Image (cartoon, rainbow, N blue to C red; front, side, top):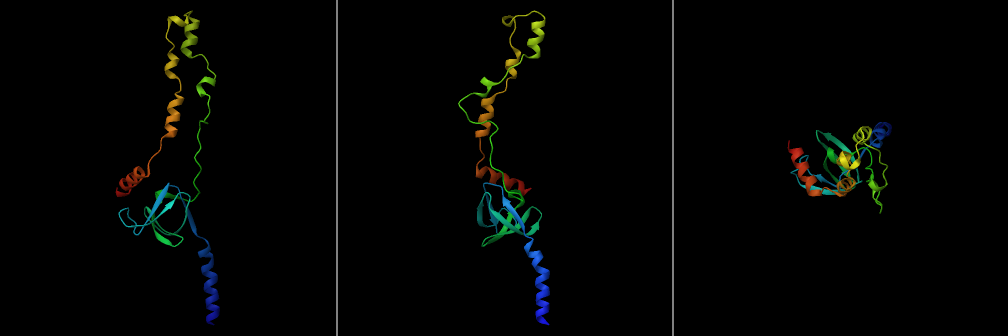
Length: 159
């Protein structure tokens, strides 16, 4: 009789245990804390794309296990899907994008031409509206340090 109870118990628990809630670390690195608070001791630090198994959910925190480590991680650092690789919208090349872009006459230039004005009689107002590709490239090269992310997280989780 005890064997039948043990087999029934295993059959009941096995589907629950096999349906683990796996999450992926999306931050560059994420701390696992001893308690669900940013001020508690750090058990370990996991790099981006590490997996954790969610054991318990509590407000803004997950109780997780990762290998031999167990603790709490902020929900902001993990997601159900693996993180995407970084992709640039502007490919690095020796050619300037704005040199190869097709230009069309602005509405001001068209209306000025219709009125018979020449280029030297008016300032090209569309020059002020050109896309600044170098500014976009500079923005893509910017990065946020881990300490800036940690300060942001501390302020966010403190609220």
